[in-house]
Length: 598
Image: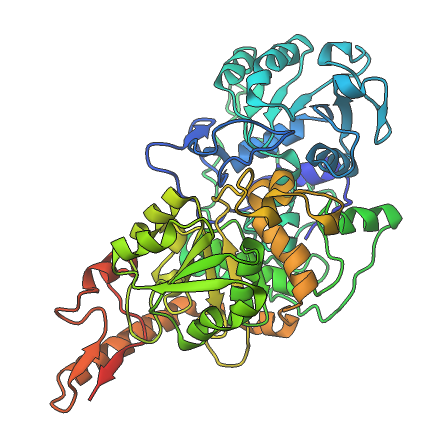
């Protein structure tokens, strides 16, 4: 993976090099009839945000607006044309989102000019702050205007951006304005809305994957080290009249499940070219200097500090699971039970309650029904087949989430995820689905409305009985900011000097909190060797799940026809009441587990 300190120009040229450098994204799904694509659909990978994250420095836009979708090539082009950025709304406070973004972009080689009338005349990170765009001297050429302002204030800023000759208008997370977009695009500016350039830069360089996020980038090429990344570029072939010949069709993007199960999150080692993911059996990491260390500890930049929080081998597994589930990011843990605890730790306060399906793995029944009481939490078990019972339980002030298994262990019971999702959205609480038995090969709960997915990777993801582990996958779609039900994410965090995770990190907040607070303070860290074994296991997931389902079906059918067996619960058997749900959520499969009575 490319070093976070590599020169900006070299790095961006690498991103814009011919097809084969960055080959493809993870599979992304559009919201039917809703997602708007900028620019018009064309060849190339795309990335869609999980939804707006509103903040004091960001926007007051509606978080329920459909997400915007941009081609990766468009984002790369936008980042490449900028050398000097005017940051409107830059803060003098080190723990504000704009300060984080400014410091990160400076480290990548951009010059960032702060613009804030309240700080005009002061110096922020070595740059003089101006009261507005027009006050910036003509000797400074502004390529991009990056806006940390409420959406309603953006149109006048867009006009100023046009007046000073900027090439790009970039609106931060939660900031969207169609009026401003029209103003800017009419003048020929490139426009990006509801995105953070820091996050997009780190995603395209692979840094985002260092913390388990789904970068949307899969590469089969090792990154160039110490060489001109354009050395292999060729000039466009010419027609007889001197015009460029059409470029050949780029290679296909890697969107197939099997391909992503093998490659997502990993790329060949940049130094050795090793194809297999290395086992980084280390506890600590070196820093470039004191400032680099401070930036890492303050969560201002991406990188590894200590393997209790993150580890390169574990991060590959985290991104792979996030990719396969269609999530925003993953936090891996030492076991499935620790993954469940880490999930609740971010959501619950003493006195809070989780509403859970009564059809769960026995260990989960014990953990939720008994053990979590020691944290001051409570659990109410309900029959999730009964919609009215679920509604009655959910609409209580202290209920913070609904918990269920997509395919219940061991009964072979299938949960109606969409029904539960409708209820949790009404209640404005997350829906958590344990997808251990189904795996993302059979079911992707996020596609059906789940907000968080948990796994015991020990079971089917790993598949070989040799590695303990758990995983928490966040969809990035639940808006925690401004929701008083979830103070760990929506209110200042004392352990990070008052930083508010949802405001600062947007749809990355839940996963960053899982690493920076959950793993740091509870410590259920996955071992790098277990991560390596699980990565290897996932490579054969599709083959194994096909055989698991076939074997499960055949044994269930045999038992169902046996004279000494009174009853068999398996979703695909004739007459089973869960057969329609198995068709809807599991592709007509019943998984490997079943229950029978003889």
